[in-house]
Image (tube, rainbow, N blue to C red):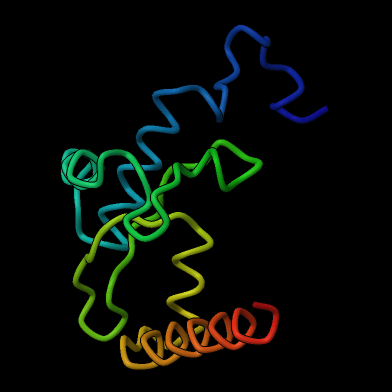
Length: 120
């Protein structure tokens, strides 16, 4: 019988208790993005609590209750803002290229115009 099985349930540390989750989040933000929880909260306030691209909360986009993700430039590490997981991945799939994103938007606009002209 291992030590884990001998510890009383009252003594066991709950790995998902709020203080531990907060500590893990704090460490993750600092390690990956160089920001504090306060910095994250400031970004969230500036973004009015929504994704800075689509305007939805993470809860509206995700089946899980996740926070908005920290978007950063992979070349220099600078934090750009907070995005939902869908918009953050969309930027990554487009290579974080504003030119490529503009061309994609123009493509969609042209396709919509053609559909309108064909179907009146």
